[in-house]
Image (cartoon, rainbow, N blue to C red; front, side):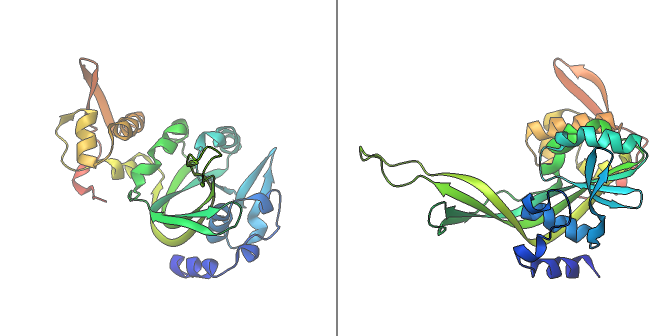
Length: 262
């Protein structure tokens, strides 16, 4: 079954059909996490398997898959244990590409507003999470899969109306669920060469973080994080300082002539 057909099959299931009790914590998981677990591994006997004192999202043979929608730093203890025990480990991190936010009144359950987020997600949105687990990125038995999705994000709204003095109450919301509605590209990061996908075209032989940010179309903060990771993996080299600014160059070991653009 192709990825697209598998995705369509799962989106046709109800939330109750998808949330099958098949191990520790399954019923308390968020929809997106459960969806991805079923999307990546249809065999439910491979879900929620005890490995030492931890529970792996998916264990198939000697390969563990951990799905984490945010805060990848929370996986560090798990990852170290799995890797030192000799397992092949994949961390899957979903990234919203197009996000439609739907506000639901916490009391009535009615839709009180919806809008589309103006930001279109790219693989660069996964950089802050990769930074949190940087020291695992060069392990031979470790890889990361970044996955782009279009999602509907449901938020529960509270407040609104007016106070006793007649002042309008500020409406607040918190995210309650994310439902994938379309699947985009994936990027598998298995070795240093795979991180060439984060090197944009147009860089000079020597460049600063601000030059990288301009060529990649990202913020300076994301550029600095990306360069920190790329320097750690020796995709780029920090060669000197220009005052307090780091000066980088591409590692000539890699073939940059075939780098594509997003």
